[in-house]
Length: 274
Image (cartoon, rainbow, N blue to C red):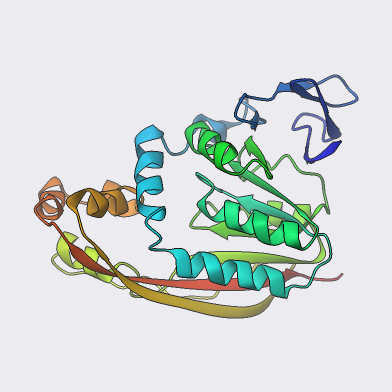
């Protein structure tokens, strides 16, 4: 059966043959026992970045499986279903450990479609493939997505590196691009602990060549983290862990609970029918 992914070397279709994916030009890629394939091209400079390591994946899994971001996941699935696309192909760009992908896949299967997820983190992709066997997963860069032109109906990008030119290339005309970004007060209470003068996230609407803006959907919820471990797990999956003084992180380590505001914007674009 032909896969959503194509050969990253020559862009021809990939077909499963025993434990490999092969193209007609003989390029071959092993399918790991967990079900994913490494399609990252090592001669590209951005592939030197390996994505989240095992500890970061562990932190993300601990936090996300607590259900704290479930309202976002539910709203995303609702928006996917409301596209009313028959047998859609969905690509989760920067899918991480697959928390969102798993639900996208269930939604898309009900619509008669298929799902693929990519991420540069081998540890994350390994976890995603284990927990979501109905989707295709590959270690790959968002700046060189191993998917042929005009293949996807929906591309999802949630807190991941942005590559609008690649999203435009792989999307069909009229296809949707869902871009999830933090809203102004996202994780405000966490910032109050970390910084003497906390700041709101910048709220802006970007234009991307070839895309038409459709809508912005806001999602907001509050939750309480009831252990230091969970508080630090949240910190470890944010950029703040790399931008914060050690003394501020020590403040977090002294907390046993923290009420947190989660505030997201889902910006919906559509590939222009030109």
